[in-house]
Image: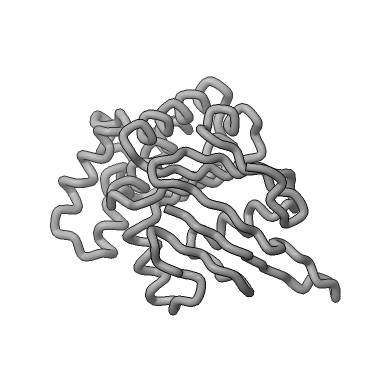
Length: 219
């Protein structure tokens, strides 16, 4: 699913060159659930942005489902983000004036899908929120909001789910429920990459990739 070879990314910060990623190579197989861990400043956020086609590397190769996406146009990267990657964020990123169903429909509307309502309802059923379709985010608990976000992430049936600190804004019990949902989705064949600094989250993944100072330490 993911093949990264000699990926590098640098930033200029206060007159200094920061090597956020330095010759990083890694793989994630189809159907795996993998955690990418590391302390703040380790490079895991930069790696996540590149894996999610939100940023591009300075050098190296990134193949997603066999396609080298490292040098594609911004339009093509937008297509890949919409069609092949489902995003789950720490802060949920739901639109407050829309219902759960309407929030989940958004990726399908961007793709001009006529079955958006039906597919959104199905995705909400998968995450256990069939009875909350018409509730707005402010009528939901934190865990329910994250389930809506996960439904939005899977509604396009993407090749990969990319989750950035998905339990960071949740209490431990609710966070565990979200992790169990990820495990269920993974057992159904979905490839999941979780970026986290939480060791408990990492331990519940099938494999852990540790990054430090822009280098992969072990995987």
